Image 1: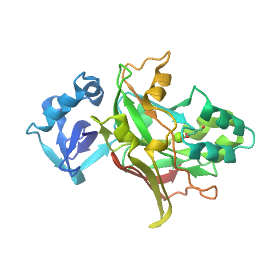
Image 2: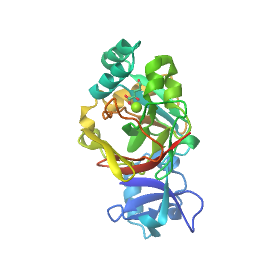
Image 3: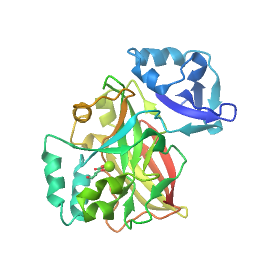
Image 4: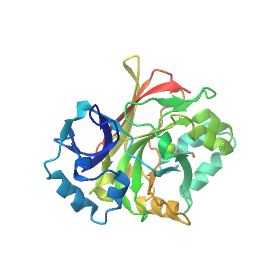
Length: 287
Ligand code: DO4
Ligand code: MG
């Protein structure tokens, strides 16, 4: 079951929706009194609640008639890194000075976790993602993201793009926040999938396709199952000595990295995709 946030011509304010008709339509859950995704995700009987809502005769919008928003309200957005072998290899190649840091964190008990975005800065489907004007080597990172409620429970899964400046991170690991946190650096959407278990999600594929002037310039895919760590393990580390009164989103790391000769350009269009969630498409602008 896929939840979303959306606006439409008749609803200029964000409404909570449920994808139905094989994702061709959005059921307006706000009509049933659900006006916050955060509150819905906190429901102890979330799956039963959403199932019951799916059977209500609520207003339906064609997907083409709504604007999907990032599925985040007040949640902090965090990210894990170096959780796939491919990412470890790419980081070690881009960094002259800190290669062993990536090697060590891949094998350490404690994962790499970093703050990624305030919720109001997250970009949704169709909106522009950024590449920094002072960076020369920029890539998208397609990532599964865990959706945690305020009790630190993983209640859903979404799709994210952890935009990254490889030259800035590679120059000095202490520049990581600048390589990762900037205008248009974080995209999420289109849906939060609830009612699926970890083994199912590990069977999903995740990938990215990049178009330039209508031509594909990079495409890559992997299995979510190639992630080294468990989802509860990552969420558990994030929630140590922390509290998230509105829940949190946790990117789980990338397993797809373009070759070292590839960098994004303004005007590119990025499609990140997870088989069980959908496709998140964003054009690229320089910021
Ligand atoms: O260590 C840098 C970040 C790595 C990352 O974002 C990833 O592996 O996805
Ligand atoms: Mg990443």
